[in-house]
Image (cartoon, rainbow, N blue to C red):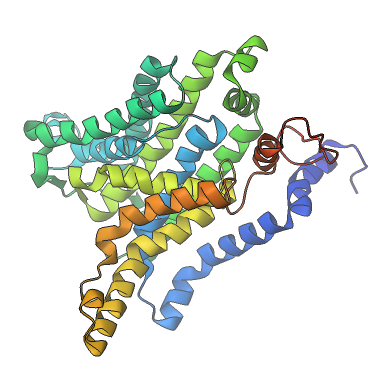
Length: 388
């Protein structure tokens, strides 16, 4: 039996401590993990037929986890995050699609896994390219620059007809082969568990980054850049790492998305995607990994499943009652407005999100305390933001 203070015992305490002190997070994390692993069985047993609809939702959740690094950990407002999603998707498409001139020029044929690695680093490089000119920008000015970048990238892909086929898009994109088992449009279970594996990897990396020295530097920079710089934090490297790592996760998601549907088109990466992702992060809770997953699941299910089905129900009710207004309702056309309304309501009613990071919640409460009032319930936090 390991004695108290041994490395093994310290590791076990470090793993158990967050879950023992935040039971809500523990319950949510356990529930989501069990549901993710067993959902294909549940879908088949209940004949739900929603496994294919859930694929893009899970991809968007992976994107939101990457955006959480930039917005939640580092406090850098990025309104053009869908651009890196497009870069990852088009990287694998350009390198593996038979209709791509680059793929035909290569002396050898790239498979999915090689293109995945290249897309990861390509997206990271473009993250640095975006971050470098914005090092001196904060708040609204940074948001405007990232918004412009997010609009430019799809336009470039649309106009580079010789390379990307423009609005026609690139098809027949390479799909993964796992020990002789090739995933295609009909292997839904294989795609599902590949997404779960990638998601597990991203969650692990995000947690390790949050608890690292770099993660603490992100959080210090998020609260006060001047104070962080005065304490010796290199803001240039810290910001560039945030942009690069967030972009690389988005690139991974882009590869999976393009490969699953074997198609990449500029219309898939519009500004509304960035709005949806930001809404997921804010709804779930800035800086909370499991909160982001919950927010992504709620908004994703509405966007991809409930909005279409609810539109049918409302229009059917309009037909039955003869109410013309209900017959014309189309929630799919109003989804961007719904995401915007979600952002406004969360900022007004619960700015910390549904499952807030403990440290972030206390910071917001401190900001709301009237000047001159003394708080007597202050709590100390460890490097992970958990109460001591």
